[in-house]
Length: 105
Image (cartoon, rainbow, N blue to C red; front, top):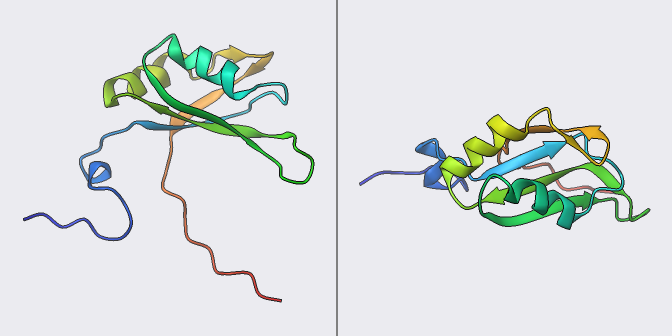
């Protein structure tokens, strides 16, 4: 029996990549334009540009989930350094979110 410590998926321990972190996005990039670009490489499960909740403007980064490990690796290889909406984007494997201490007043 194998053991997977913490909240991480066992897939991470097998070095399987499907979630990608995309940075240096233009403020005009939308979920749809991000999805369309990554769909040129493979099946896109989800694409999300992260928005500032106060200004409702893009924070300049987002996440894309690809359908398979092979498609995710192909997306990194083919799209890292490519242009989207006038900006050169950086595509990398997404890391698990780090836990932060709760905010206290």
